[in-house]
Amino acid sequence: MVDLENLQSNLNRLVEWSHTWQLKISYTKCSLLYINGMTDAHNVDMLLSTLNLVNHLGIIADDELRFSKHFGNTVARVYRAENNRIEISGEA
Image (cartoon, rainbow, N blue to C red; front, side, top):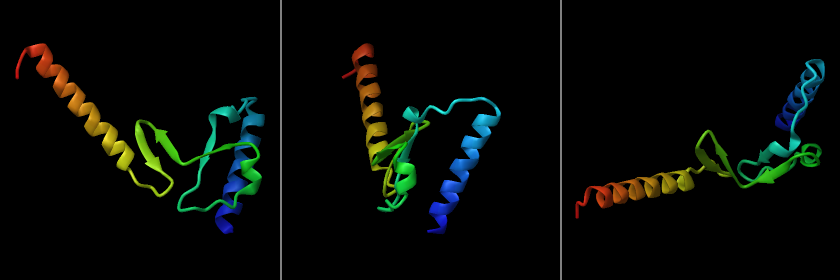
């Protein structure tokens, strides 16, 4: 419960900061990723959507902090790039 209280406190501070500096927070661009099934942040849920998978700076992680989707996408991109290189150069 302490983690949720810290989260809510930090979110409140962020909102206060945004009001002080007259910067609007775009809640539609914000979301929650509950890790390991923790889903008790009911106050925060009202404003933010919940995700099972997040892509941050090109790194894809799921709600168990597994990166298998990221690795799979990276390997697929490498294979596509290699196949394109082979087609362009005429190698076979």
